[in-house]
Amino acid sequence: MCAMIADSLDLLLELQEYDRKLSIIREKLRELPRLRKRAQEALEKRKELLQRAREGVKKGALHVRRLEAEIDDVRKKVGKLREQQMQIRSNEEYRALEKEIAQMEERIRVLEDDELNRMEALEQIEREAAEAEKEVKDGEGVLEADLRMLKDRETDLKQQEESIRRHREDIAGQVPARLRERYERILKHVGDYAVVPIENGNCGGCHMRLPMQVIYDAKKGLKVQTCSYCGRILYWKPD
Picture 1 (tube, helix red, strand yellow):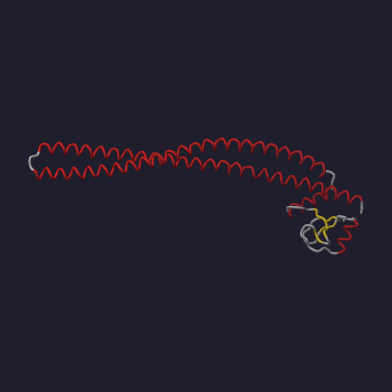
Picture 2: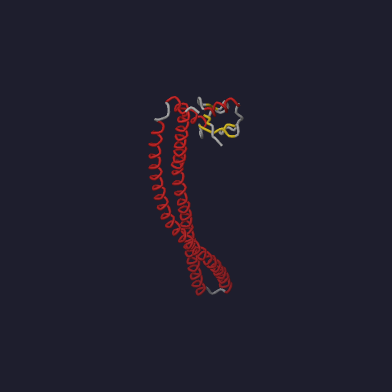
């Protein structure tokens, strides 16, 4: 194999390795905003639950107050009817008032039962609200820790990216310009590996069968060979 071609292919493989590392790091960097958003959304869901619980407490307390007011109002009416009973002389009117009082007292019992049920439900909602508030507080701590961790990860990834980029530039500068441009054009087109080995007579990229002449020329290394199907640069990998 021609030493110049072999050296160029070795440099391309090294360049490709740096490009793969850069691609992985940049994908991780692109993922960070999504991870931040996911962490923030988790806290927002907890806040929504807390808000609903607080609204439930507010509505529950309002129902209880309304029932208390209604019970108080009915009791006052009963008191007035009792006073009227003391003043009437007719048995018929007395019995009529007694019946009305009995109905109102039954109404009071119904309202008091409803009030008791509402108060029990309110206590449950208040417990849920307290738990939701704790969940939000805990969630804020988790979010703060997650965001700090993601920030540290971003800093670390950017440092790695810069280090790899410098090494890549150094290697890229050693590759013949036309070959480097060809490599970068292929890489942009295929998106993964621009330089692939010949594997059992097939292209290591698209896995199509290669002509024997291409395999022979790649093995001899007299010039750079490419796959006629996918355009990737080929190299011979000894067993």
